[in-house]
Structures are given as C-alpha cells and as structure tokens.
Length: 296
Length: 237
Image (tube, each protein chain N blue to C red):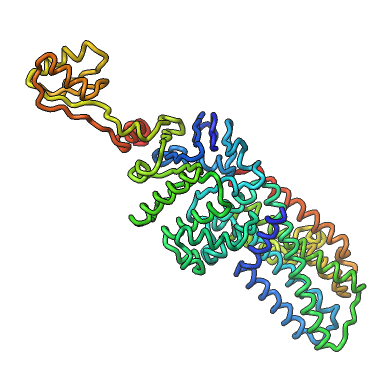
C-alpha cells in the first residue's frame, strides 16, 4: 500500500534522508522510529507530497500522493497537530477540509464522534489542549475514509487513557485492512501497537523487522560451578559463548532447552539458566547509538 | 478544482479578519459618500475607489498569507496536492471575492450618493464605471493574494500591500518629479484607475486612462501571481 524506494532528500551537501526503502502493507501497522532529526518527518513530508525528493520514490497504492485523483480518500495524513487556525472551531475546520475533498457534513460529524471530540466540535481550536488537537488531526486524516493512515507523533499530549485509546483505535483500523504508518517516540506504545518496525538513523535505514522478533530471547545467561567445562562444551558448536564472571556465561545461538540437555548429558551442574530478552528500547538505543555519539 | 475553489471561498467567508476588513471598507466608503455632500456621484468615486482597492488588497493579502501563518497550507496541499490547482483556486477565489466586495461597495456608495445628492449623474458611461470597478476589485484581490503566497507570511504580505498602497504614494508625492513614474507602479495605477473611473476633472490629462491603468495593474498582478505560483509549485510546503 505504501512503498518508499531509494528515497533521498538533500539540503545542499547534507542528506536528511538517504536511499531509504521500506513498505507498509494493507492490514499492518508499521512503527517508524528514529531519534530527533533522523529524517522521519522529512520522509513523511515527501510521502505526503509536501516536500519533493531529491531522488527515489514514495508512493501510495502505486502512485505518488500528488498524482492521486482523490488523495485523501486513499491516504490520510496527520503530520502536525499545530497546523490549524486557532480562531476557527474544530467542526468548521473539518467542514472546510470536507468541502475541499468533496465529502459531506455527515462524515464530519462521524469522524468527530470517532475521535471522541464531538462535544468540543464548536469550540475554537485555539482553546483545545494538545491532546484535543491530536484528536482533531486524526479526525482530519480520517475524513476521506482512507485506506492508508500516516501519523507523525500522534501520542504527544495524550493522557494515559488517550494512549490506550489510540492503540486500540489504530489496531481496529488495521483489522479493517488499512495500512498504518506510525511515527512515535513513545517506544512502549509502539511495542504494543505495531506489527513491524522501521528504524532510521541519520536518514538511513538501520532496521526493518517484525516486532515479534524483538521479544524472542537474544541470549541465555548460564551460571555453573563448572563454567570452564561448559564453555568448552558449548564453544564447539554454533553458539557464541562469552564469560561474564568466574561462574557466569552468556550464550548466544542456542536456546535454554538445548543448553540444559547438553549440560545434563555431560553431567555439568547448572545453578541458573535464564533467557535474556531484549526490548524495543534496547534495540532502538543500540541501533541509534552512533547517531547519539555524533550529536554529542 | 471546483472543490478547491469552493473551499477557498468558504475559507474567505469564515475568516474573521476578512469579514472585519470588508466591514471596515464598507464603513469608510459610506462615510466618504455621506460626508462629501458637495460632490456629485462622480466626485465621490475616486476616494471611495481608493478605499475599495486598499480594502480588497488587504483581504487578498490576508487570504494569501493566513495559510502560511497557521501552517494550514499543509492541509490545503494534502486536500489539493496538485500545486497548480491549489494556487489557481486561491487566485480565482481572490478574484471573485474582489468582484463581490467591489459590487457591495459600489452599490452602497451609489445608494448613499443617490439619497444625499438626489441624483445619479455619472461622468462616464455607467457600464464602463461598473465594469471598471469590478475589474479593479478582482485585480487588487488577486494582487494582494499573490503577495501573500509569494512572501509566505501574513504580516509580510499585509505590510507589503500597505507600503505599496500608503507609503509609496506619499514618497512619490514628495518627489513630484517622479509623478509620471508612480502611475506605472503597483499602486500608482490603482490611483490612476480610480481617478479615471471617477472622471475627476482636477486630474484630467495628468493620469492614465482607466483602460491603460487596468492593463498596467493586470501586468503587475500577472507578474506577482507568476512569482507566487512558481514558488508554490517548486518549493516545499
């Protein structure tokens, strides 16, 4: 549904985004992650046709956004919760947009109710909290009942109930078969919401993988009074064995069952056998560490 | 394009700044018409037309600059991603709004002049007068909007049209040797058109004809609009 291929954006000699490629399929939610200034918003702006790529393509349903006949019916973008006229009410704001894309007033009421903003629809946007503006942004993105939804930091300003509401909301849209691309700094939300993650650092892709793979055990911590013998035994196979302490090893490449069976077979006593899970946060910091070092 | 035009007209209609500017222009025109009892209708038309053109210039500048002031240009371009269509819809909306405001002011002035002066004697053919006023409204609206789009700033656009409309004429009045130049500057020809439409005898022979002034204004509007549309089309939002 959404395809980014070889996307590059340069400002003079500096590349904000460089040779970036990823896809978002219908019925899936992809988390788009990166540190501040990594190029996430630049990428989303190019996808929305607000910014022109230096090279590469960003397409929705196979077509650049600017070339879509009825763009907001194909893709709904929520890129900036501040981009509203403060003296105009939320409902009037949506009506103006509805006129532009050719949808009726009934749909305006529908989306206001969908994002639970109907009771505040007649208030000027300037009097909205950030969380309410985020909901208005989401309502605007959904106005055309699009097949793809792209949101940039939609959880900013939301209270804990709002975070949960948004997670459930996006999961429901995904279950309807829509493609969702979600840029967010709130890794906990991302981990609980998305199916895949795309991580960029300095404008370049550093990870594109299913979120489920992150939860799998990355290594196994083993404590044994006969650590030397165990290390020698496991070191013969495909595993990577690292000595952490006199009696502690970290084993990568073998699961707990295999290590336990091998130890029993060779009569090696084990005091601990613990799978070590990495979190999305661990992975994120690991992948973007060099960028942070560069910034400092 | 039709939806985009309807959305731009709706945006003009719901803008408080535009509404207040229309009301202010109408009030100024009405005050001129009531206060200037000695003159016949034709004498009223010059200051009233200057008020009209200044009001519509500001309305256009507001319409062109507001989208950038509040970043609503993002929604405009998400709804109408083809930049040419988005820009054309904005220009068309400014032209139409200029015509409507001109018709409102002309009607208002005419009614007041008829009531105060008990007559509707016009120094130029009525058709020419009406067509000229409506054309002036349309072109000044488009000119103001193009300034807003080209500068991408509401304060910048309003400031620029005020400098063009108010400051430059004063500078050129002080420098009388440059009087023949001002007629060909963006606001000078507005004044010339106003004078010509109003058939002010005092200015007869010293300023451009209404048609020539209109052509000069059209040229300036086309130039600024081309810059605005080129910028809209080629630069990131």
